Image (tube, rainbow, N blue to C red; front, top):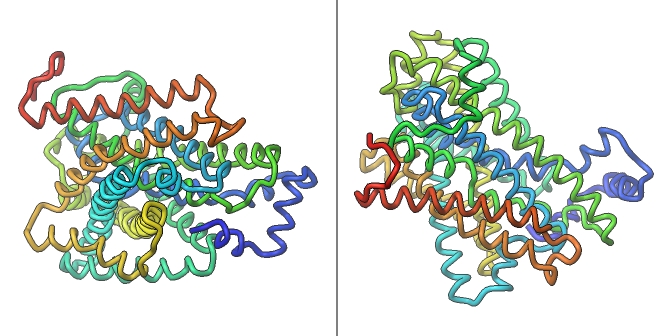
Amino acid sequence: MSSTTSSSTLTDRTTEAIQDVLAGRRQGLRSVLLFAGPAVIASIAYMDPGNFATNIQAGSRFGYSLLWVVLMANLIAMLFQALSAKLGIVTGRNLAEMCREQFSRPVVHAMWGISEVAAMATDLAEFLGGAIALSLLFKLPLIAGMLITAIVTYGILLFEKNGFRPMEIIIGAFVGVIGLCYLAEMFIAPVTWGLVGFHSVVPTLPNAEALTISVGIVGATVMPHAIYLHSGLTQGRVPGSNPRERRILLRFSNWEVVIALSIAGVINMAMVIMASSAFHAGHSDVAEIETAYHTLTPLLGAGAAAVFLISLISSGVSSSVVGTMAGQMIMQGFVGFRIPVWLRRLVTMVPAFIVVALGVNATQALVLSQVVLSFALPIPMVALVLFTRRKDIMGEFANTRLTHMVAVVATVIILALNMVLLLQTCGVKVPGLPSN
């Protein structure tokens, strides 16, 4: 996903139109759309099946109480996706490449190894989610759903050789399907909007289990591979030849991040709202995707259950595609080589097949994969904060003191959540945290 590859996929007509915008000769909505795409692709990582699993557990177990966690995680995601995009636009390098240039070889290899583990955890969630939905919707064995998901994912990945526009359109269509499905669910499920508003802005943490789910929500929302990927999607896609043009590109990028991730955030909150409205009052023990589907049918009707599965299939397939793209870019950035897409796809599918073969609960595996991701997350966050504040790397586009402080606080929040979860996992009681 080098700059030369990206720029060569632009048609002469599109290139001319972009130059007109950068020169100030063209304005309007169609001009904005010329630059749209990277944040749309990155946003699918915030609507993957791991989100479904953690949000269902959050809503069914704790009602609307953890909506504030979803909102907080989404705001942090906006900041770091914007910083990642800025790194690619300003430097022409992605985050993994910058790490390889700036850090020692042992550090780079360690970061690559952790990133690969995170990529496998990501793909476990994405791959299993799509397979579960297919098996439920079409009454197939889970292994058959996994094979279908693998074939469809690989087929979509083949479009990448035609340039980034076809892939952006395909992923954008999947985002639209997921959004429409949850819009429909909001009309079907009985929602207490007053409580939704209250718990969206007032932090509450009912017990220690809520903390585990909260860390899972953060891990499912702020995704390590999305932070790496966004910088790769913007590097050289539309190269700015001078600071003025880079400022224009950054303005378009920031607006796209806000819009795309706002949509992703609303969808995530809708997942929690749906689970709370449907399950919390009488079915608070619902913690699995399969149980949620079977419980939705008598509660809200077969239509609501089918819509839920369609959104999950769209999420699983599209996020699996994006995960594979990110994995390729991470490997190429850290160690300088690529492997064939089919091999990358095969390697990252292996953990999912092992989970199924061992009989591990699929939804629990999804939630645990998000906890793994939350521990891998601080690495790209810290690297991004370090790079985007340095004037020798970013020049006049280095983070302001305010932006740097907000990014540091967000990183500290993630680290603190992870530390508390680690202590809790080791049986150490955390002062001030209520027990289950």
